[in-house]
Amino acid sequence: MRPGPAVALLAALAAAALLAHHLAAVGVVALLLFAVCLRAPAERRRFYLIGTLVSAGALFCLTPFIETIGSHPIWTGPIVPVLGQLDITHEELISAGVNALRLAAVGFAFAAYALLLDHDGLLQAVRFARPAALATRLMPTLERDAAGFLEALRGRGVEVNGVRGRAVLLSPLLASALERGLNLAEAMEARGYGRTGRTSVPRPRWRARDGVVIALAVAIVTAGVLWL
Image 1 (tube, rainbow, N blue to C red):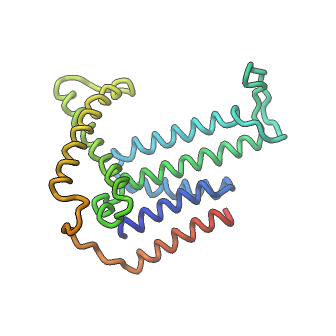
Image 2 (spheres, rainbow, N blue to C red):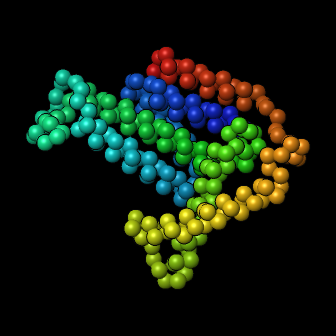
Image 3 (cartoon, helix red, strand yellow):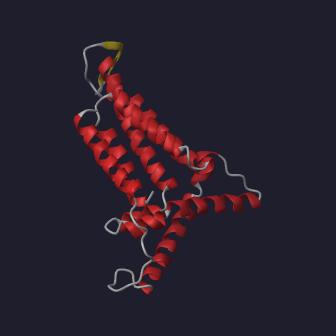
């Protein structure tokens, strides 16, 4: 499958999750995208999946205390200044589940995009989205840089553990990302990026399954608007 139709399908699934209102429908979309993410190598997908699941879980836990909807209380708590009475209703739990699954679906869609797609092919195929594709293409490079920094520290007898230990890597990662961005900009300018008449690698032909995937993406978004 070409990168363009694959991006369209992932975007359609994320859009369907955001447009759907039924808990089961959003859950099916999130589960499907989660299964797609499992095709990526375990070492790379771990951080994406943990970040997505933690964010979705936090949203699910906080939503019932922030929203005030429903008339079927499950738990009634104390009155807190400014916030008022803390309670959890059946409707709030449903809303929290839908919102958490929506966030999870979007996170899994982005994880599949970052982990499984050919970003070089996407840069070549999707001209109007080249800035965004070029920016996200650098994420695997940052992952490799972080792994290299960890190996260098371990070689010097320094073991990096936990969130606080890994936070030390932010400064060198930022410095290396800025330096790489400058080098990339200079290389693109030297090769005539954006000028007319530049040469390019021939793009692969569209196959029948690529058209089927585009039609499926449109159908998924339509279903999200009308039925889910």
